[in-house]
Length: 143
Image 1 (cartoon, helix red, strand yellow):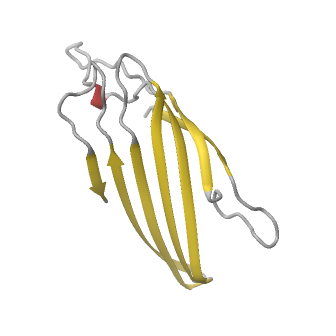
Image 2 (cartoon, one colour; image 1 turned 90 degrees about the horizontal axis):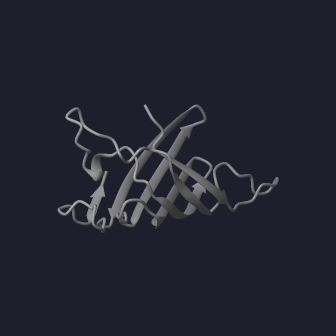
């Protein structure tokens, strides 16, 4: 297994007795750096399609925001959204913007047991440039 992307980020938040930080704060800014190869060939030595490469070769700017609401210590609703845009690309392909989102509901009826329901969604724009795949359109999915 190879590392294909590395995200370096800085986050805001509070860390004191009244506002302990359990996870990153409400906003995260960062860069996603290219680490995976984008020039891999198949067994017949023909280059793989760009969408099937382990890496994209792009450096992306990322911004995320998180909101939390808890009506009691045993109930928490978390919403998180991320926006990602390529700022530097390789070999004439501009990867499309992406906007994944998460919604998590956690219930803790007992101190040693927790139930978690999570819904993920993703909107990804179409890649552009001379080496982009001609067919894929904008992708919208919920999982």
